[in-house]
Image (cartoon, rainbow, N blue to C red; front, side, top):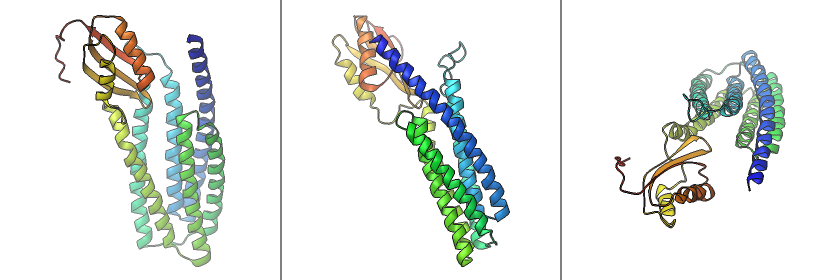
Length: 297
């Protein structure tokens, strides 16, 4: 069993290392694309193109955060940071969400202004840059999709690439409307659509990240179910002072007090938590009398 575990861990680590390589490539490509889109948006006068660039930039920073978190997260715990550095990814994601929300609000203001006072646009420049962006989004989506089944970061990158592709298609439509029909207000409409999606992304992602920072029990877990499962173990008389939280997105921790006589209970409970609830870090205090501490929490 031990050899199998180490073999699985080694394979998982190898997959993560490969993912980091592709994440770095995607970060460089996305940042280069964002720069081209921003310059092109300023020249073409298209706030929709700039909006697509801002969304790409946000995705690029998300990728960079994932890479940094991978590097920092593998650092050993210290006497100061006893849980290690895995929560760096959560803090980085929180900062990125704030930036994404602010960018969305900026686009709303710019989009409304373009609807009220439409400006002349370089439609062909918008189209060609957006076609380039669509090609890049398709290529990065293909790369990330290959590894999406093994790695959460790659799966999220794939979903972001799809969203970016739809944003590029929107700007292409805007450019076509400008070239063929001289409809300049479409730029403001597309910008508002991109802004709405950015704000929506920020809002739906806000609660899960704050829950982790607040040490809340992860969604989909039931403390009562966990407590009852522990009580069913022969020799467990009572379970109390039970806390469940996430150190990082996929790393749950639990602590509890157990009333019982047998030291083997600790191993049995640890095994139960791992296999049934995927809780791999448990701090279990075994007591042979009523708890002398205040356990109201």
